[in-house]
Length: 343
Image 1 (cartoon, rainbow, N blue to C red):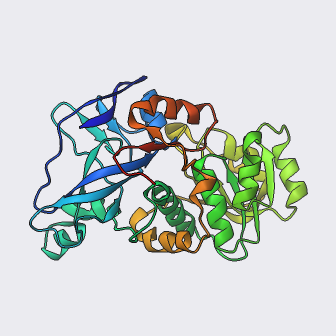
Image 2 (image 1 turned 90 degrees about the horizontal axis):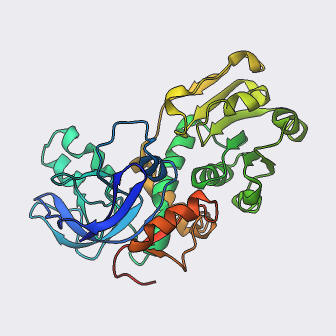
């Protein structure tokens, strides 16, 4: 099969790799579509991922697969179903992060493994392999992964009805946080991002949108939301960005740094704030948000077209062009066609 492989930082190729073979608790899937992630894929390609990486590695963690065969102990999946977060497994001389940009991939039946008494470390990580509703669009379904991660994070952070929220960043995650905040009933949502994304931010539901290059950013935000914000989410994680808006955080408010741009060097200067505040560090559990995110999607309260051009996916062989389109801000996220599925 073919897969998108980062041979070393800065070098992305599509080449032949061995087909995966499913084990007894595994489903073999034809991978249909995947979406790029600027927080992970681009950092891996640039050699700036904040955790150890063994190159060469197969990219992709936002891919949708269709089951074509199952192992003898699989009970939760059946042939023909669509599954989330399917990816190629590691193979000799080739790691995965997380292997989603390939023609074939493996999903594990975590429910069967748990029921059969296997230890949590054997199946816990595969709770992300979830079944999608019958008849759903596999192109749009690639957004379920971003939506699940960000929905779990924002709800664990405590954002709900009546909250005032400030989101830093206008990429895929930033737009997702804005949309989730609106769906959760926030009374006021502001976004700081690139000026070319203002229309998207407004479409996601932002009441206020400011260019990140605004000189007196905190002053401009204070004019628009004089009472300040209960929550600030940094979807980029770039050093110094939270400090720029910290004077806008209410005393007793909460800051969460979700992005990984300067993961090892993030710092907050608390004396810029109005008073004591909390820092959210509870992460997210993608699987716990699956049901709610799918329901919001089916209700039309999450629309993949805000993030993706569903009608013009890149072929797997064009993944370098897809990554460039995102880096150059021509696209928020790029959709990549991996298998034979057609809309």
